[in-house]
Image (cartoon, rainbow, N blue to C red):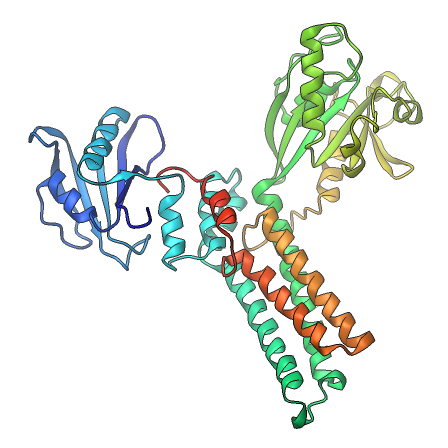
Length: 454
């Protein structure tokens, strides 16, 4: 399949002034020539008619030819720029398929660019991140990653780890040279320096990940606690219906907002209680599914209730039925403080943060927003230089753990062979970020989330 010529619409679905169809592969030029009747020159804009096999004109537009390997995919690539109507674009794609191309799979153009060493895996992911960016800073960070800023930092770490590994293994393999690397301060100094760089890159990656992916915030609690009012207060609009009737919210409501540039995916859920209503039961089931997949839970309670009583309620937090709750951080929102004349503030109840506010009046909402930025480690003064994903953070943490283990082996047991093995594993984890080390399953999961035309 990698040798096939592929075709796809590269512009967004729907109607527009221009629609672009992209071809990539050995037959691209021949197929484009059959459609346009032109002898294509490299990087020359050809104005032409797009004709079907009977010679009838389907449309007129522009044809561009980018010969490989100096193209995005590294293969011969042709772009046909027609009018942006779905019907005409589909007709041209069908025509290309009848002439020897096949419909591209999601992300296949970017995958070919990766496989042909035009971009690495982090840059390929940055393409999707750039398309899906929800904030200006996220888009700028994704653009920097696409230009190779993140990859350069990873490659620098790989180079330093590799150089240290070479030195260690040479000392093991050639003991007659009398290189006592175990007592060599240079090795320890290099290890410490690499660790510090790991910390710096990881901090930047965390900021980039927050700006790109945001966090999933699930609002939970009993009926009439003010969950929907809180969603409206955070989003700044009347997204959810608010009434005094218990059980008004019966389905999951979603809203995407920003807090000083940090994206938030807020989910409002049905009130948690025992119910004989079949529809409400389904809403509660969906609520638990969302709660268990949250990055953070906002547990909304009535300010007239005590926090301890609510937390001890098996109806609210039945850990035996939902053990995943133990691993999800919780912020308690004590709502309706306007009814008790309780001033908006942030307090602690054991290890839980309690934010006292009024979703109805808006008092204390800024305190909650500041708390959310703090607990997610978001710093609006540190914009970050590149985009990152959770898998990147996991790979960085894994690589760092191997480096720390190797450092411990060197200091406490003088085990050079174990240090060398930890450095190899560290190198391998870093390679997973850029795709220097990857599996078919990983590539499939990444590129399947792309647009068809990318």
